[in-house]
Structure formats: structure tokens, C-alpha cells
Image 1 (cartoon, one colour):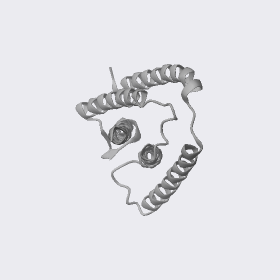
Image 2 (cartoon, rainbow, N blue to C red; image 1 turned 180 degrees about the vertical axis):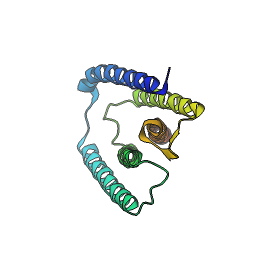
Image 3 (tube, rainbow, N blue to C red; image 1 turned 90 degrees about the vertical axis):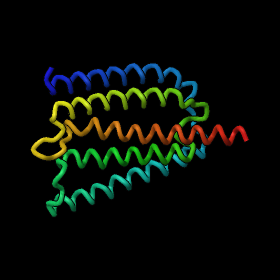
Image 4 (spheres, helix red, strand yellow; image 1 turned 45 degrees about the vertical axis):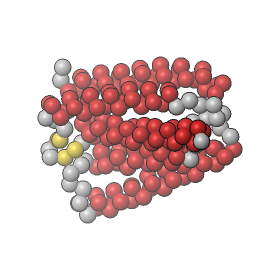
Length: 174
């Protein structure tokens, strides 16, 4: 199976997993997905931080492109990186401020979803490394670098969620 076909199959599997996950969680969300006023304020602040992070990174990216200093990655991959960092910033901020999960929300489903995404993206990244096509013309491109970056961002979110869950349990036990 060539890389293009492998990438397309990976995307299709990811879309199917997301559709199934969303449809299953939508039924639960009607019952469980309620945020209190404080959580909504924190999430609004998280959106703001994520937006300004994206804005700052895009300005830096424009500067790097204009000065021709962006030599190791393609512009598309750099833009994707900026957007993914802003989303990860929002998620980590909300997790640390206890506004990521709803009032009755459980972290278990997020552990599983993140773990599955990390495993899939890790597998695809390893496949690119083994095939020797991680770089295109000496640069990290969107098509081959996106799985690695997505896996890293979900790993950061998962680690933050685990640390926060452990801290909350320790505080509840004391």
C-alpha cells in the first residue's frame, strides 16, 4: 500500500471513529454536559487565550516567511502548527482551571479518545519514518508531519488531564 492510500485510509478511519464517538457521546451530553457559570467564564477566557495565541503565532509566522527564515518546515505545516498550538493552549488552560469537563463529566472517555488518537497518529508517524518520507525536499511538510504534531498535542492534553485528575483525587482524599 503506498503512502497516499495509507494516509487516505487513516483519515477515513479517523472520520469513522469521530462520527461514532460523537453520536455516542451526544446522547450522554444531553444528560451530562452542563457547565456552571464559573466554568463558562473560564472557558471564555480559554477561548480568548487560544485566539490570541493563534494571532501571535500567525504574526510570527508571517515575519518568518517574509524574512525567508522558515527553512525546515513548509508554510502549510507551520500554519497548522500555530493553529494546533492554540487549540492545545485552550484545552490545557481549561483542564488546569477545572473547566474542561462538565459538572458531571467523567475524564474516562477523554482518556480513551486521546489514547486512541495518540496510538493512531503514532503508528502513522512511525510508518512515515520507516518509509523514509518524513521530509519532502528537506522540509517537514503538512502531509507527513501533521500526524506527529497531532499526536504530540493530544499527548500534552492527555498528560495534563491525567495530572489534574490525580491532583483532584489527592485533594478530595485530604
